[in-house]
Image (tube, rainbow, N blue to C red):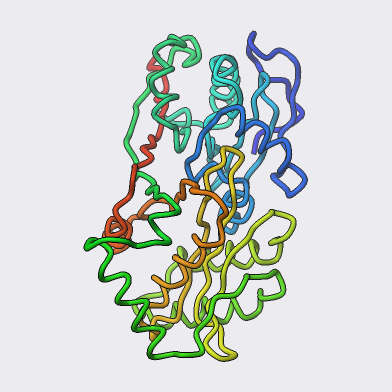
Length: 322
């Protein structure tokens, strides 16, 4: 990690600025910047970022009137998100961040800015090329987020949702004691046990991705109240059989962070998602995130007929050749 006290070498941001480890105390400033940016992608969730720090550390800084979120993994610094703030402040913030990446990283790639929204990619043409500091930009499409309307997910009307309704009805016939209850921070231990059960039922090789998710879920439950999270648990008798955990972003979109169910309970996933949506008191737009590189997860999300896809892009900056 570069020395955070070292002044940034750019005429755009001449005043020294510091990078701090991302912590819960940064949520208000982060959310204000996100509201100004107006982005509703799941990757822009403060909870998503602060909880997923098992294999990388995240750092936050105020840069040219924007909030910059940086990630360090294996000695390489990147931007976890593009600078957050009002669009008119982007060009200055981008140049300041590229200057830092220049000094932090060696090799042909200056750095990467992850999860750029299409609106930002379009505005880059307006900003010109000054922010690139002479380097070359590559724009790489990433897997999109899936968005749904709350009322459609609660009502599940029509032939296209017939199988979802059948799954829920079968669950309720098989388990008459099945019920939805609010998820609470004190459920953390039971949620961890459910997550381990879910992982064992999936079979296959254990990998680091599962460790990262377990760490993130545990962190979300530990800081449930401080992060302003809410959710639903599926109880069958006294046994926890499923959870859906989410939040409302500053943009008003509801973001689903985690869903875990007992895979031996058919219909649990369909039931718990419907009941999570039922919690909402408006016809909110619900973002369930992207497919995480899993074709089966993408098919499951597509089966709910999303009303829109949230496109996003990786911005890779290649170092100028001498």
